[in-house]
Length: 212
Ligand code: GRF
Image (cartoon, rainbow, N blue to C red; front, side, top):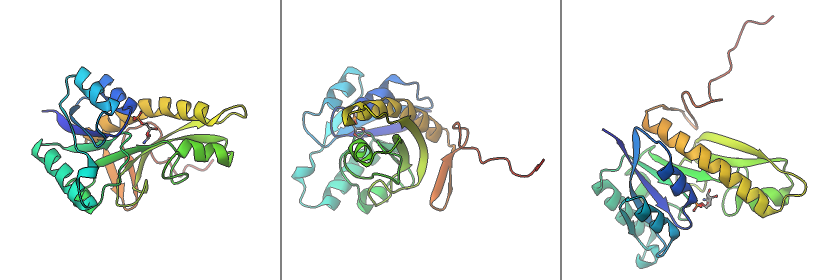
């Protein structure tokens, strides 16, 4: 019995493609939802034989109406997890309440640094020496939910912001499938605002004691 995953996208869908190309077992991408007509993510779903639909947020008078309509579609599809992969809408309580602790987002910065738009551009402008990406549980804030996993990349003096964006994106494509698989296997643990995935490299708490 596979764990049914919906992927939400708004644009090119390279993170969606990484999920479609990966062995996500026991998870499976069952449906793709896009809020922007003509987004390349739709073609990627079609090529992979995955059903998709467009729900244009501009057709709704309030955010809550859009959130409810989107959640209704996904609930009726029997979705267990929702993965935001380049999805450029903030989802509010009308959506999140339908998938408690089951919505993941990937963001191209080492949160809580550089939330919001253009994380790589913010990091490049700030002159940081390490940048990266974060997968987190989605809460009602902007890129503010409990962090599940991160990957870091070096920032080099000669990098343009596009160089950095590309380097981060390549890490996103590695990290997101690992997190989705681990979450589907039930390895997510929460401790208030902190969360982690058991068995994902680097998340085991350090062994204490044994002072030499
Ligand atoms: C990615 O960096 C993602 O983290 C951000 O949007 C960028 C494009 O994602 N939210 P994709 O190529 O559409 O997956």
